[in-house]
Length: 117
Ligand code: FES
Image (cartoon, helix red, strand yellow):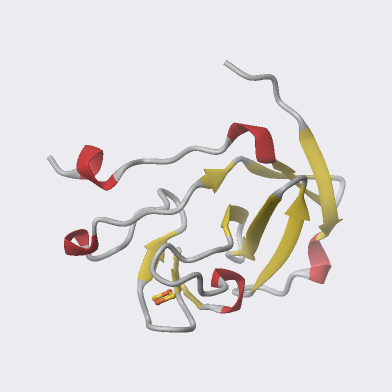
């Protein structure tokens, strides 16, 4: 198991509720979303054709890709329509002293096959 390595990103008020922002950490481009009651982070690039998920519309705990409308569950990273068999990596995210922190070294990816019961 890798060690935690929290990177401070920005103050919470810099990401309005139900919006996303992109951030680069090392070689990764991530999308951080404010869900209103918590922050979540996924990889920014849509697995379909690379759309910037940080610019997608947030609805509940889902984001809609701005290019062609694929939807992703921000908790699991899985495409909402199981028939798409697609996913994005999610990253641990927390808030401390008003700062959003992301651990880019502990990304978690649930392959769609694993989600099918
Ligand atoms: S690039 Fe995201 S749905 Fe096509």
